[in-house]
Length: 479
Image (cartoon, rainbow, N blue to C red; front, side):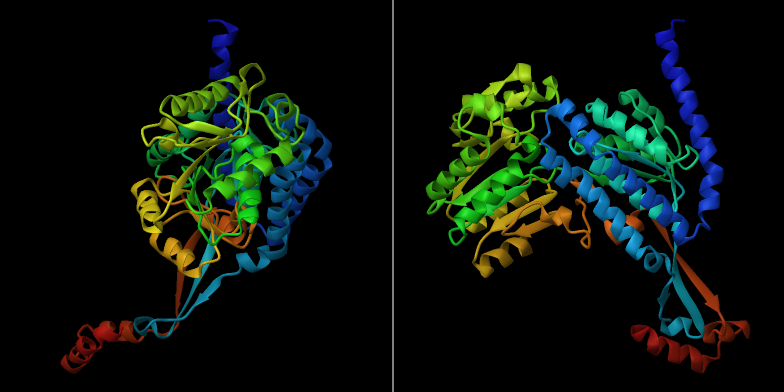
C-alpha cells in the first residue's frame, strides 16, 4: 500500500484518538466554573487580535479579501462574541428559577444549563474566521469540548486558524483537522453530542442525515435566496447604498446577501441609477478598474467562478440584460458587480442561490404579488425591505417568513449580538450568537426539588376521595 493511500487511514485513526481523548475532558468540564471558561475565551480573543496582520495576508492570498472586510466581518464579530460571553457568562450559567404550576405546589423547580459534551464545528469558506471561531466561543462558554473542521477552499486562512487554535488550546479540549470532504465525512461518522454546521442547504441535509445516525443535536446555519423589496416610498439613496454594500461585500459570497430585488416600477429607474453611481464610486467603472480595486474580493476558486459565470450566461441566454457589469476574468477568479434586468423565471439564477456578485432586479406594482412570490419559494435566511410606509412594512413582515429581517438596512441582524441569528427549515435550524449561542451548545435540563407536594399526598393515601376527584375534574380547565 502506498504512503498516499495510508494517509487517510492514519488521519482517521488520529481523529478517533482525539475524539476519545476529549471524552474525559467533557465530563470534567461539566463542573467547570464561569471564570475557567472566561479565561479560555479571553485567551482565544487575544490570540485572534494578535494575528491581525496575519489574517489580512491570509485572506488576501485566498481570495483577495480587503483588509477592511477582514476587520469588519472576520475579526470584529469574533471579538464581539467573546466580549459578550465574558461579560454575561456568569448570568447565563445561573439556574433559571421556574414558578410552580397548580399541580406542583410545594415544589421548587429550575432550568439547569448543562454542556452538551463533545461538539463538532464545521466552518465555511466565505467567512472562515468568523464562522468557525465564533461558534467555538459559544461552545467554550457552554462548557464543551470541540473539534473544528475549517474549509479546505481557503487554505491560508484555515492554516492560520489551526495555528491559533493550537496556540490556545490542548487537543483534549479543542482540536482541529484540515482536509477535504473525506475529513468531514470521517468526523461526521463519530457520535458527537452536537454538530454546528455552516454551509449550503444541500450539504446541510447531508450533515443532518449523518447526525441522525447518532441522534446528535444540530445547529445548521444555511442560506437560500434572500429577497429585498424597495417600495415606492423608500429613501432611494439609502436603499442603493445599503443594498450595493450588502450584495457586493465579499463579492457576494455571503449567506445573508440580497439575492434578488423587487423594486416598485415607479422608482425602478431612479433606484437603478443610484445603484450604478454607488458601484462606480466604490469599485470603479471598467472591468480592469474593478478587478484591481482594493475594496472588492475575488471569487474563492475557479470552480465557483465557472458556476457563477454559468448562471450569468444562462440568464442572458434567456433574455436578461446587464444594466452594469457583466464582465469577468476567469483566470483571476473575478466577476464584475452586475445588475440584471429582465430576468426570466426560467433562468437558473432565479432558482439557485447565487453566492456571487450578480443581482437580478424585478419591477413590481402590487406588493401582494411580491409576497406571494416570496412565499412560493423556500423560506430564506434573510429578508430586507426599504420603505417609509409602515403599512407596507407590517404587511411584508406579517405575511412572510425568514430567518431574520431588516427594515431600511441589510446584514445588521447578523451583527446585532442580542438577537438570535439562524434560519428556518431550508435556510437553517437553531440559532447562534450571544445568549442564543450559549443555549445552542447547552442542554436545558428541567429540575424539580420536592419539599411538599399536595398532589403526591393525595395519591399516597392510596385512594383519592370522591369529593376531591370531583373538585379536580372541575379544576382541569384551570390547571
